[in-house]
Length: 388
Image 1 (spheres, rainbow, N blue to C red):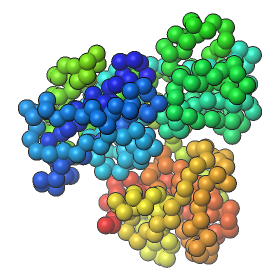
Image 2: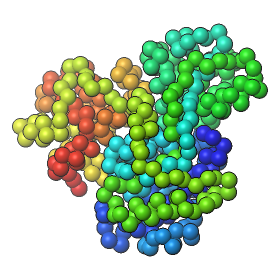
Image 3: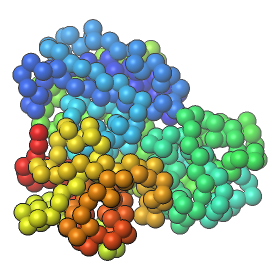
Image 4: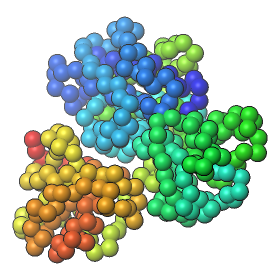
């Protein structure tokens, strides 16, 4: 990300010391504010210690819990559960939050593009077949974009050897060696690197413009006072951190639609498996079908469909239709009755666990496999009973 954004999440953590509760927060309970930052970004290690609440005392009263996070996988999970009142995060987490009951109130940056960079003898995306590609952490925005640029170029991810690591700049530094033949980078970052290393690599694909920096989203059911306070803070307080410009107000979420399409969503259909709605799932359950929640124990305990059993799907394979199931763990499947209809669910269209679980069950010989693609979010939206 751009230089001034490197420390932004840490500064915004100050913003997030909200002293108010939303409509969904019980009286007296602290507001929960998630501040997520990519650990691959320079300065990310400062996030947990750069939290200040002094400046917000004039805007809000009460307590708040600040949840600084460098775990983008967990941030993506939390963006779908509505367990936090406010989320301050990179574009892909913001896009997911918008799709799951949060309203965009402010953004910090303009627009940025990402490029897929390869060794000079590689002329297009197809030329990456059987080559090694370096991405930052799997759930970083750069990796989301990089995977999308590969698949939109007509090459399945399984056709390349993806290597993940924490550093965002190491990919460019590694091109030209024996281990790495391509990587993803911000366009500005690439231009600076290319000027210092002319002729060493070239761009083979470029993304559309994405929202730069961070978005601030607030639960849609928050009180008007909370939304106003959040917006007032980010738009009127200068120097949240030295050298960091303030946020600007916006409710225009359309720039995040492209972000949400970057390989995040599961396919609409799955061969051999019946895709159903939440209403159909509850009807099947009333006739004896087993509802199976394949999320984590933490997510299940937070809220799940009434009557659903927990059978976690541990996911390490790529988020693509032809995933390598041997990399994953789904040991609990062996304990289920193959002759009983089963309905798999997780965290909605962006969550691949139920897709993978459904395909795995069908391949294992389960006779009637149903896939609730909308998952727990659809179940809740349909106002079907939940536990606890």
